Amino acid sequence: MDTNLGLVSVLPATLAIILAFVTRNTVFSLAVACLVGVLAMGNGLMGFPTLLKETLGTTSFSWILLLELFIGTVIAFFQRTGAVQNFSGWIEKRHLSRIKVQLIGWVMGMFVFFSDYFSPLFVGTTMRNLCDRYKVSREKLAYIADSTSAPVSVLMPITGWAVFISGLLIGMGPIEDAHQAMSVFIHAIPFNLYAWVSVIVVGLVIMGLIPLFGPMKKAERRALEEGKVLRDGAEPLMGEELTDITPYPGAKTSLFLNFFLPVLVVISIAIGTFIVMGSAKTMEAFLGASVVLGIIMRAQGIPLNDIIKTAVSGMKGVMPAIVILALAYSLNQLSKDMGTAQYIVSVTEDWLTPHLLPAMTFMIAAVIAFSTGTSWGTFAIMMPLAVPVAFTLTGDNITPLVYATVAAVAGGGVFGDHCSPLSDTSVLASTGAASDHIDHVKTQIPFALAVAVLTLGLYLIAGFSWL
Image (cartoon, rainbow, N blue to C red; front, side, top):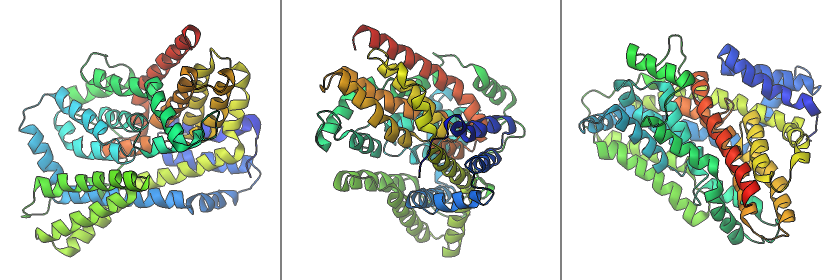
């Protein structure tokens, strides 16, 4: 049963974030934070394994576990067939510049909009070798992959994000059914300033229209001047079992069959199931792609034992990410049990006025999401709190204030999902780019914070001018 421990409730998440930056070891930081949290709740030392057992023995974690394993399998197959190398070679024949190579990653991230889990892994894995050749730091690649995942997914009305957010709106004010709720979500899309600006800023940074600063500038200078895409002592968040896979000797592979076709299988199943069933079956899509690609590999002369060994190597390669996700899920559940989000809301609810509502809603949602690393959990908490307030202020009429409030919750949630070291998509961006996770977070946060501050300012201006 959820409780509210007041200020103590923010201790585990805060400790995890601080330790992550100080020690550069995410697993250690999350484990210590979970242990401190269960002790603070009075559950004793046995509370830690109990927390892991209850959190990880769920359908939601089983889903992401299987998803990661199948994605790891597909990535391993890409590498064993030489598909990634073939794609890199195909791009290199176009004699593109360093900027254009990064822009391809930016566009690819927006293209794979249907899954914020697949997008950063796909972009990072596909573009990693190419970016290495053009001396693009792994931190920069992770930033590109991360900033075109959740920020893009939340802007699209045909994703699980849209279904989840609109589902939360049903029953609020005059919103009576799913059709009306989805209409509100669609009308709120232009007001989701954080997501829009985040995606646009990536392109501007790549083109040099926004200059690099902070740790990212240092990382890019290192890559360009020293040829080091990773800093000395960095620990890439991808196992060697996956990064060291070489193409099978003598296999006659095809760029279309071994790369584009599996991607089309994933996209077709994900979007098709969304249209027919109302829910994108992403995990099933990668299972299907794994099977299709395995059959193709066998037809191309790669032995069955080698295919199985490659699949297992792929699964082993994503284990570092799975361990972090497991501990992050446990910390998220712990924060929920301790009433972290409710405490943050309680100390800020008196500030809310009609003019400040979108800005304060965005700020509170951002703090909650960054502290817990979960955007959907933030949506579930903030939508029932902020949107009814907006309807009260508008006399139960659907106005720009309502749209802006819905968008502010969505954007604030994405901020945390986008850059928190506890976030699953941030972990997956580090995994896809094979970047040190904390290096990725440290280089991305200054840009994410700048966008968040700009978004907050725009909501304040809008609130006092025409909302």
